[in-house]
Length: 295
Image 1 (cartoon, rainbow, N blue to C red):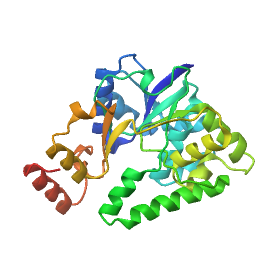
Image 2: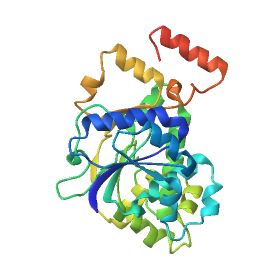
Image 3: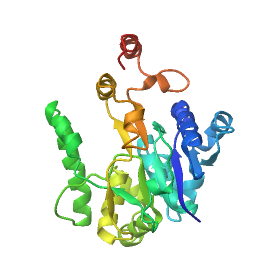
């Protein structure tokens, strides 16, 4: 079992994004950390053809789910896609490839050389994203987006209450995150099994996998808590990317603080496979903005 691997759960709409991610890993992966990608079984041939030669180990989502001894596969198959992907990502540890894994989303890509030390302390303890999301919440206040604050408080309170933890509301993101198998196992042994639940039940109840991991880490202390800030620069909205670009902040500057960049697929629709997603009006609007030098 290796100390650390890279992992991404994907599906065909994100094919171009995964190819971009794989190419960035091939370019910057100094220590040749293994990179696994799981997709639905029916999509394996598509990904195999496009990822050939990029050093990617392909897996079927179904095999990841089968590794969970108590998983109701029929229940999981009927879950909405956004919930199913959370279950698959969170159960990857059961494959037994590593003690810890960097869980990457398809819309991420690396911008500088990286190695194990970016994600694990010298003793093998993973760094954990842990703060109070003040940067995101302050931005929401400036833009009068009260719903962002309300959603953050609601989601934090829901999972904290399930663990009986009182105190400050923490954010355990954004992705990518470094997850340790011992933390997921402690959640299963100390919370899910005593309550007659599987991880799929937990995700269905509170669909925020990073909070399940984070609260289990605080509750059961399976590994030491070593807080860190975001590993990647995340552009939640197109205007944030435009703002940085106009200020002269590009990958060279960001590489001083971050391993990579995430451009949310919700607005980077030109990367959809096989064609740019969205209705005619939204596609036309995006194309006009790009011609004007905006996202």
